[in-house]
Image 1 (cartoon, rainbow, N blue to C red):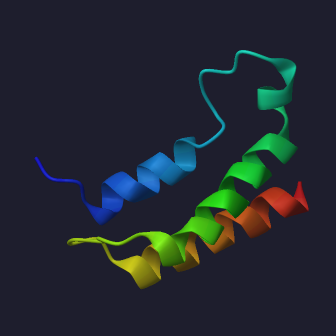
Image 2 (cartoon, rainbow, N blue to C red; image 1 turned 30 degrees about the vertical axis):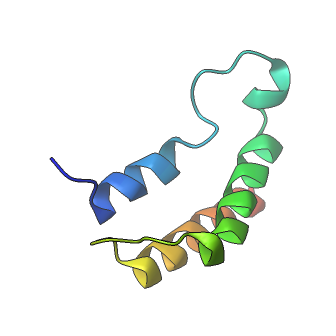
Length: 70
């Protein structure tokens, strides 16, 4: 099975929500930083393959906006 846009969205949804080994990783600010880092890395991703870059970019920005409201 290949990595799909849906797989990438599931990855984004999971950022900062599991494997918490410290109190820092359990805070909303930690998830915000991970989402911000993901957004900053988008221009440097060389191969998007079959992934929908524009949809994923918009999705992660919406997720970050939701986190910032909390």
